[in-house]
Image (cartoon, rainbow, N blue to C red; front, side, top):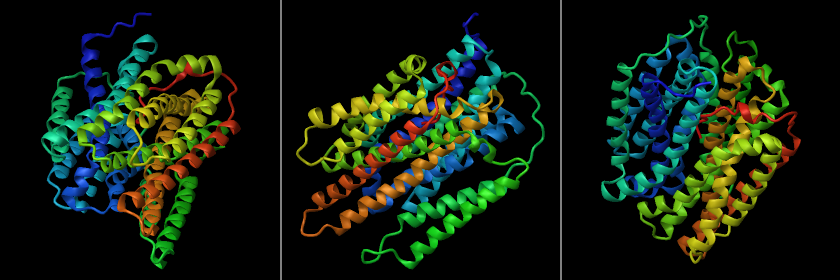
Amino acid sequence: MNDRISKANMLLLIIVCFAQFIEVMNSSTVVVALPSIQTALHMHTSDLQWIVTSYVLTFACFLMIGGRASDLLGRKQVLMAGLTIFALASLAGALAINPIWLIASRAIQGIGAALSIPAAMSLISNNFPVGPQRNKAFGIFGALGSGGAAAGSIVGGLLTDSAGWRSLFYLNVPLSFLLIIGLLFVKVSPSVKAEKQSIDWFGLFSVLAGIFALVYGISMPDVDGSWSAAKIVTLIVGILVLAAFVRIEKSAKNPLMPLRLFKIRSLVTSNFIGFLMFSYVTGFNYFSTLYFHELGYSSLAIGLAFLPLGLTSIVVTQITPFFMRKFGAKRVQIVTQTINAIGMFWLSNMDMDKSYASFILPAFIVLGLSIGASFTAVIVGSVQDVKPEEHGIAGGIVNTFLQLGGSLGLSILATIASTVTASVHNESANTALLFGFHTALNVSGIFAVIALILAYMSTDKSKHADSVPQGAHL
């Protein structure tokens, strides 16, 4: 079958791929710029995580709404709306004068991305014929997503050092509007008229409120080494609201997260493995950034330090399907989670005297390979026993679990690190900070061990590498 893409479809592919590229790149650039943002806005280290958490939290909670809206309102229109929201939120972030302003703009950026990514993926599915053309298009889409993460570390470092951290947000504005203008001139295949369905607003707001309460409660500081009454109440409220969310989903006509799919064992284990993975991956990126800052690295040097991690992830996503066909998702997951656990425990030994070349670089290269392969295995495992007509729903669920893992997991790990740091006495500030990092990274290693146990428990009835869904927002 011919895999040659027409000129019209090539223009569409370029636009949707770069829509994902700039949104993924933005996430990486902001992580690299965290130390500069902290200094400029006088943020406490324990509050810095909210710059990352606010984005992934809203992205996770609005992801399925974005997918549903693209089906009901038109994929091209929803992508344009998402890019517009992302651009305006970026402008607001560039103009931020205090932490709350910046964190709020990051949350709105997450909503824009949650509308854009499902719409972009749907445009590929709807405009490229099944077979070589669609596979090629999704392959390019996935590669540019991974490339955005790698490019973000370099772009973030260059711009932060030369023009300041605000330039990272300003950059998104013209890029987004260029893509919107391009979409105006692109013709797309008419969408199949979706059956008019109500949006599960109660489900959306309850899961958003429940996760926010948990994240905020975990992040609240302890009082004299113990939990305050406010923290306990906030956590209880979060748990109760999430319990209410489950009840809402049971009775909802068009549930945000269909609970019947959770009867599929492979989907459940893959979702929880993904949740744990995004927890410790987001955490180790965050702590590594602060560690490099303590070593005196410039923003550009931090970006270059992360580059091997991003490049190896790009490479491995192209070859993982071969190993999936040969060994199956379960075996790939077992091997990679073992490597990930060892990597987290290895990095927990970081100190001010360790050499990047001998200590960090080997770990980043190996972890880049194993983490990239792990995420692919998670996506495959989440759909392997799901009916083909429900792959979209299953993909939306696993992406939601990934992003919630990032927000909730980072909150847990950052709270652990700041609590340990605050409890260290009679030591230098750098030493106390490193104690916090060590503890959080050891907990990350425990998360990876739990993921490994879940991988052993998962099913792997057949090899499904040929149906690897591309373009997961990682």
